[in-house]
Image 1: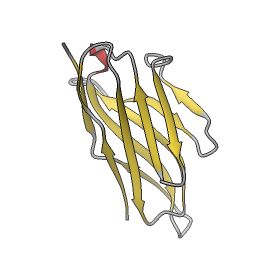
Image 2: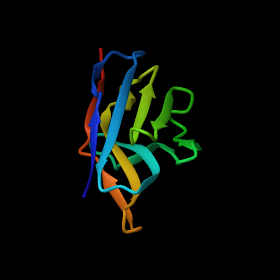
Image 3: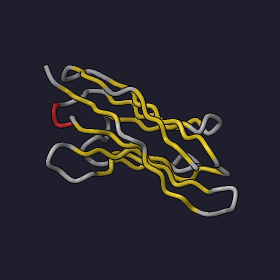
Image 4: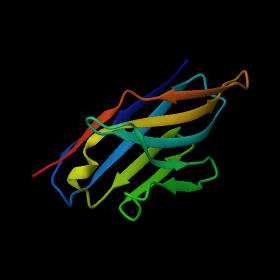
Length: 120
């Protein structure tokens, strides 16, 4: 069994910064892609950013230049540094990981979500 535990959400003023963290634990052989998604009230879940094992990144156009995704493979942890936050960034942010289990099976895992609220 694999778990993703997120932390770092909260309330921030427009223009402010937050850093989200997500740590994977459990029966893991390796972690392939890790990423962050978000879901605003009344909207569908959308991709924010992903990072592959070798470090290649992908960002939604709406966050390019403001958000930075990174990972620490030794800690099985992915981070999302969010700068210049806007009210439209308000959402529940979900961590996602594609994991290879010790039985060499692919498993997609989601975190429980952490709320980010950008408001004055």
